[in-house]
Length: 472
Image 1 (cartoon, rainbow, N blue to C red):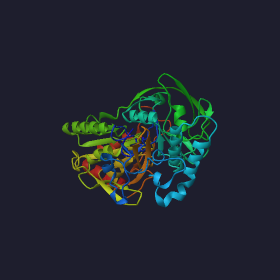
Image 2 (cartoon, rainbow, N blue to C red; image 1 turned 30 degrees about the horizontal axis):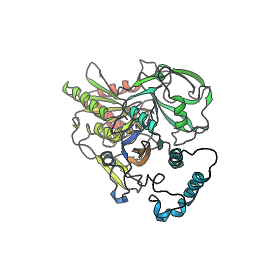
Image 3 (cartoon, helix red, strand yellow; image 1 turned 45 degrees about the vertical axis):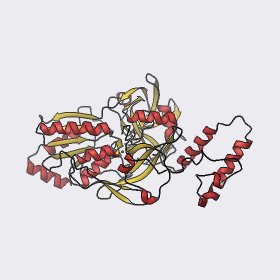
Image 4 (cartoon, rainbow, N blue to C red; image 1 turned 120 degrees about the vertical axis):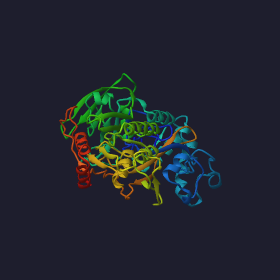
């Protein structure tokens, strides 16, 4: 999904129009199925090239025009058949020889193709898509104008589909960045969205989708598989699911309009413990979280559970805001750009629960990705919370949504993110201080991780401090 709908990395989702990611998102290309978007930076147009030294941190990118793909007009302006160099403003002089084959191919196609009329826009789009695909990065993508508009809708928290976040794993079950589906690149459900058609149909986190409507996904890209699964409200799709290595079983899911409720609150332990679940990282989610936390504090609750399970990510700005509620100052995460330069993003300094008298436990699982991992990693490294549950998904990259001149867009990995202690959790995940596995046969009324969190928070102060020190 950190995107995420347009967020600061995924989030996978997005970060200006809003979504969430990275897991992520996580994320999210116009349909209810999203890759962990974990971190996304807000969409922006392609701007003129800047020097490497002019690059700023992720949050600066979220507020300014993007310059990562300067020269994005390379294939669309200033080209005349038979003329090169000075009339190819996007081609650097030092790279002229490398680009020669491209321009020769373009010239030959446009001047000699005899199979029918040439759609120049399709040629240009295909060239851009080919460049992005050549990166071999499952979190970077070329989006048509329709896909981009749909993606922004996803990030807004409403879309049509089955309501699930997707990712990829290898045959051994490890998180993978593979791009072509097959025996060693499985499309997996990171997390079904609460109350969605996928959840109602019985689909669970960790399920592998091997076929759609009876047709194998082998050989398809992630985008290609996503396009087969998404669809209009009221239509059905049959997903062949492999769970825990067993034989594939078909699940029929009726697509619907998915509206994500990003902040869910409850009172636990007879009102002694405040429970706040965050399902996505849009800017709106950060505001809703602040309001929910403030209400708990005003009610006298000093023991809080932050539930990030199944959260695929979203905007980095939202991740920063939520983590900053508990961290007074210093780093929340660091950005490492293409040059290897590391830039810290610090707490906002406006947190309302930074005092250690407010005890915090964060719940994570294998569906917690991207922006969720930024928050969990920050609170863990800064010793502000105890992490309980399962090892998280493991997405440590940030994506920028970049709008192109024709309304299409790029979703491009522009940075790695690191925890305050400079851990890169990509493909590793956040390892809980208190590991609690979720039994495969756990019923709807059984939640071992939540039970453990309540148990830790309701002990007397001395016992709680000892338990947290031992867990750490």
